[in-house]
Length: 503
Image: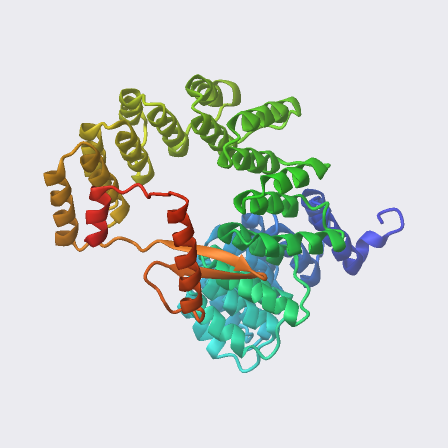
């Protein structure tokens, strides 16, 4: 370009800088930009856009300010690009300043500028300001609608997001993906799957993000058949080389009870990330194959894939599942000595669980006292559960006392202590626990289950008879229960737990 004199052509330079950005060569593109004596607004916009994509959003802000210094006027594209940098910095006040500038130069009705502002406010959690702008827009395109739906989803208001989604005059794949991902991220997997299935009925081809969200929902619900359908869809579209999708498939399979299929996906992958290895190790541990999980970790090390903090959570969980105390200690120590990873509270929690399961309650309690973190509910709960299994009433009482401070309304904590008392014949204390629950208004969370039939996940909650086929289901359960009794099955009952149920 320089030899032929094309470097004087701002349009060609803009295309060159944009290409550098796409290829991850933004620094080189910026060096080319700085050698341009008189860049025009189009060239400025391209460079701001490129910088806003990188880990240097402050440079994009500096360049935007330079537009004013040089006497240029930002145009309809300048604002959306610089606002992306504002989002990266979470600089709401700066965003408000830029909003004011857009009004002063007469762009308050421009759909591109307003959409950029809505995206900025909603991404920063200022949903009321985003909503105010949206309601005041006379003309909205699908990008504007998507920005507002995404804003509601980001703050967890899926009801408002759904209401707006249903009102959209036109929807694109991003609209659908936003809803699927929003439901998945707000722990509403059934609704995520429903929207994903509706996409298929309306012939909307899901993108990678939609499939990742749907697979996450399948993993949460154990919706194996739908997960298999997505797997087949990925293969048919030639997307099987995408590492994140394969990682999500492995996660879905192992959490849906099919470790074999998870291993099959893993073995077929030519390129594996640390997430890939961590997911399969965690899956093997979840299914009780602790030794196999540890073997997989050894393979990971031989492949020179450096484990991260999450990998060690999976490894320590594997050791806990098979009771390998010394192996767990070794990996816990290797985190810092070999991999320079400082153990977090999750790692201490795994070690305390490992020691507790192995009956080393005193050592588990000592580690809890010595760790540099304030114990959370999961750790105290682990110690309480171990106390119940090994009959240590005193330690169980201590654990519950702390649990009630961090989780005062968790009925499961009372259940565990009640069972500990019942197992040691301390029925008076069982009654005190029950009375304490009643006085504090603590109620047992109803149990729940789900089953997938013909790609539809049905959820059931104890005491709920609202299902359309409730009477038929109840009849079948009665028959199954009768077969159990005929086979000689007698449920293990605990008076402490029964009294809790009555509470």
